[in-house]
Image 1 (cartoon, helix red, strand yellow):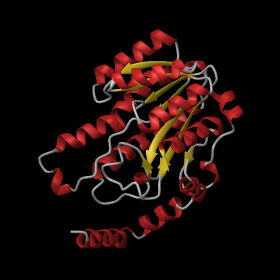
Image 2: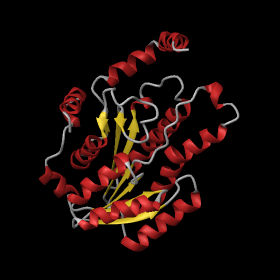
Image 3: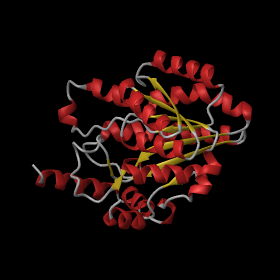
Image 4: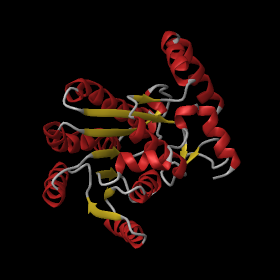
Length: 281
């Protein structure tokens, strides 16, 4: 990892540092960990990292061929990985995934809910394309919620489990042109906040990570590689640390005061955004 990325992670705060390898191994060795969106980017790097620490990773995404390639790389180095193709926007496919995974492995100890659809589009450009909104909801909210609804009963019955939600700063700091994406991410975050008290008493914990920019194939069409951001490998290390320390919420230290300020001064915040959009035309 470059020095620039290491410095950027330091700016985010100590909670964004790497977990000690021995502690990660103690947390995941022998565990069954399901990773959604595992065909590339953060999901793929997380699966590789957890497999090296001894987890049996269940790889899910739409592109089964990419998952098989990743599973082959993991098993070639002594790890354990099983690929499952699924489209999270298809409710029946999600139900089949749950049934197949539980039939094959008997349990899932942790879920890394990483799959996501990024869409930056103005309200005007969305006219006549509402299917983009519904698909974004399917990938970022409805599909993950349905998946967890199928897996959580088993976790609660066993008295243990961990859900890690890979979310975004857009939940805290909504900005123009990101309505569909931000709303879907916020919806799933709210769903988790409501179910967390119920499942916590049964030994199942939830961690939400509100990532800043992470340079991945998903973000590449929107953001320049010159912008400060995490690599997919660094993001995977943050997820691994969350599995060790099990925080409820992880956000950069400067986001919370900024979110309070933008909420208290919502009118001026929106006026500034409007002016920026006018200048950028």
